Amino acid sequence: MKLFAACSIWILLLSSLVQANVVWDKEINEFKTSYSIEHTDNLYNQTTNQITDSLGRMSANYHILKLFEGFAVSLPITLIQESYLEQSQLNSIDYSITPNIHFFISDETSVDFILKKSKNETFSGQEGAEFVEPDNSLITLNNELAQFNLNFGRDHKNRFIDLSFAFTNNSQKFKESELSKNDTLMISSTYGHRVSEDTYFLVNAKMSQGNRAGNKTDLQEFGLGFSNNLGGSHKLNVIAGIYKRKGDEISDGNFWRASDTWLISEQNQVSISTSQSSQISFANETLTQLNTEYQINWSHKLSKNQLLNLILKRKKQKFEQKFREYNKDLVSLSWTWLFIEGMKFQSDVQFQKISNYLTTFSNIKDNDIKVDQLSLNMVLEYTW
Image (cartoon, rainbow, N blue to C red; front, side, top):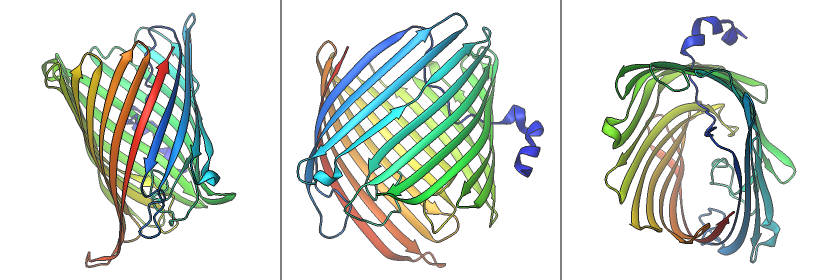
């Protein structure tokens, strides 16, 4: 518990990585339902015996936000049912529920209590199951979150401090067997000071304590950065710094989070983001891993009701206790058409390439495994 003995020293510099992305200015009572058909050419991300199948996905999303005197309540709920054409043993139901209570303490101060519980079925090589050995079956991801946010300077006029305290519990299961389980206790915050009309100087830090199967690891981060609107056409945010991790081994390195949304014209917008962070891993070969991501998103407005979107993404995960890397490159092109009020149609093509390999002390790649996957998706969504 040495990690938390130093809290009084860090408390004003702690960094907030998880924010409540809710606008509390009006009530919401919205229901969305959608049905999609998806075809995938390499369902299990395998190099041999590749299986192609199609599925139907029924999704229901309900969000209610109620305003009361001095506080508000938000409750988004998502249910997803997937039914496969041939691989019926893979049929599943996913869900997510995230209640959030928001207190309006004053014009400058607000408090949030957030809970989240979700279940997601996925495959080896997909998000959250990158290091599970390929198998013709589903991997179940269970996630739980309890979080407390305290925000000073809510309107961000001259200066602000965002504090966050969170506990997460995540597990990875194959059928009824638990593959891995980890939990993390985190304290974080961001301090921002206005230095010009549209520019803020940021101080960022985080402290966390993670645990998996009795193995504990402590993390400390400290970074500096800025945010800038650049005349209204850009929304630029940058945080970069150093981290130090303690556990069975001591390691240090650099972390960053940077994003820029550029409104080129009324028809074109480009969003660029990149991040790197040290995180506790599901993989049994290591306790922690270094995650690095790069993404470019280009949106082009074809007409008043039609939008074209291109995404290029690269994700790299590197073990911190062993020489192993996992890389994923993804290209996605989608077209969205809002053909009547409340109803839209979307189609997209997605290609991803996965590289999973071990490296030696001389940085020579060994046991290199490469997997390609192509998927086509068509979605019809209605909101009322």
